[in-house]
Image 1 (cartoon, each protein chain N blue to C red):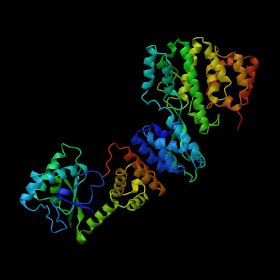
Image 2 (image 1 turned 90 degrees about the horizontal axis):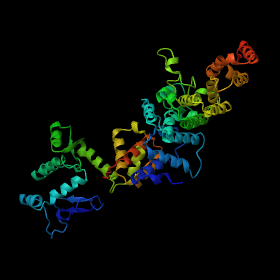
Image 3 (image 1 turned 180 degrees about the horizontal axis):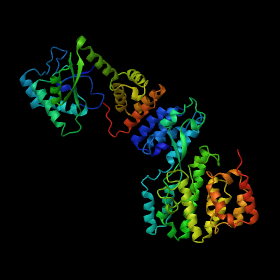
Image 4 (image 1 turned 60 degrees about the vertical axis):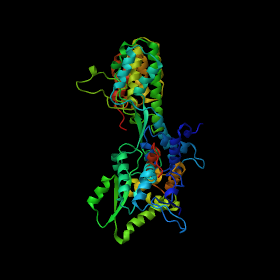
Length: 337
Length: 223
């Protein structure tokens, strides 16, 4: 691999040497980690000096949790910056869509608006007020806080997906968004999410679909208006698949079928949200799925609200035996534990 | 220590050869049989300041390369006074002229005297002249020890070690300035050495920011 300093000019190379000399042997210190967390995108020399030291620990490897901590910081440095909070990004995309642009570059720009990214940051003063940090950190959570972040949620009506009729473009966009969601869940796993709980680890998400203003009370915000993390990409993915279904394109149904067997709460919620539509999933398939749910998925309105909505919306379409079984379970009430 | 006088004075430059005692008004030769060039009379001043311009050219060059510091010299003789005034005036046109300083020793700061120096484009540094100017003597000795040209590297190391015992924000302004100066005047190898030395002595990481910022500066001054 090409050495990190090889890309630097003479002056930066001199700075790189000085910084490396200072930091050598000091990566297993909290102060150094805090210093690394504060480095900005334009602190490239300092960042490269750290990467050089991580990769070239000649005498010994960094011990845990330091090694994982620095790798997470490295991943954070490499992730693309979040779109600014002005919300102008979606209007730039809208303008490109209007002009007929359906390029791969546009798909990348749309995904970048909403894609979840790793966020690592030093503990806030408030966090430190309630928590005494151990002298000898045992896990990454003893060193800094981690989470998912992203741009803000995108209103599908701004992007005018309802007018989009290019199924191939929508399919490519759905694939890219689905990959972004999967990547986000993978990042969440790296920072302590067990793949199921707690769901806040992936960033809060009250609904996996965008709730338009017409379906909200006056002055009420979209349920995930202020949530960052997995929510924006999931909502946009839902909107794209919905449009594919509206166009009668089989790719939309294929996505939903895949979600049904994907082992992640987000994908199961996406399946439930899409299955409220009888064009997507048959009543018998929904009924069988509902009967097979464990208690948490069946009852938890916080973690799986779309499943409760699906049950309520499609209940009248189920066979009598399925209805009876569901009613019996509901009458029995949720378990106390 | 090497000494030079009048015509023998080397041209100002950044090389190590330009050091020692330079007698710009001349010095008596150690051999009494030899004649010596000296500036003593009005005619001598006219010869070396105006006709041959030896002294003005030297002072002009030195003022562009180094910070001139007057020690025990009022610079009130007319030729030098005019010369320094001319350099001060040039400061508005040439950005490579360095700031000039003078040590002013008395029992209490004299505001009028200090303003007079400033008016001549020279920054006065007041010190307490008690005990036969001991404060000035100690400063110059410390200065010599830390000199980049012929100072003692052990003295530099001792200062660095002392300064980095505190973190950057807890250090005094003087210590921060000295640390910055030691980094700024160094070449890249010396910076790496000081950086490593500081870290070895458990310097707080805030000192790394100082090193990092200085090495990122576009223009580097070594003296």
